[in-house]
Amino acid sequence: MYWGPGVKSEDDTALNTSQWGRLLLLSIAALVFIADQGSKFLVLRYLEYGESWNPIPALRGLFSITHVVNSGAAFGLFPDRGMLFLVIAVVVIVAIIGYYRYLPADQMLVRVSLGLQLGGALGNLFDRLKFGYVIDFIDFKIWPVFNLADSAIVVGVAILAFHLLREPEKAPSMANDQVSNPNDQIPNPKSQ
Image (cartoon, rainbow, N blue to C red; front, side, top):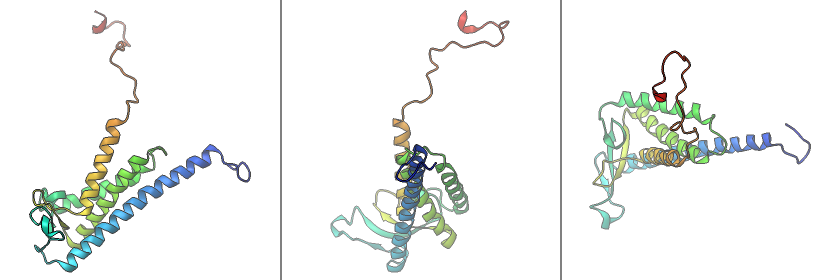
């Protein structure tokens, strides 16, 4: 609603906050996608399949960049189920895009979480569509090899879980409420 020059209503502020929230989600998703695809481009360009590079020689036994491919889920789980994970990625992307519009304007942590998940899902979906598998390269030796998209998805899910666990209960407690009986002819077990 327009109130005159220099005067903003609460509706204008909410709209701006909503626009910033949308921009935040899309910016994070774009940054994750670009970082993921850029890192995979470098791996494909400079490392043969199965080849490792040790950027920090002292950590050779703990960490390296290793070019592998993954036809399954994140961290190499469920190999050779690429089509299933392609469908799951599309469903997740559609769900995030559909859901974020309904988030309250003050839910910035959730928007960051969804932006990370969206960028990661798009990065791995792009690989599946282009190659039929996902390029992985972050190798901590004691963990399955993964990529930046996998990391963004996991961090996004962790942020969302943290947010949901610390969110106070909004529904009233029903523990001490009496059970109401709409039909007075049937005895209420709580009143006996």
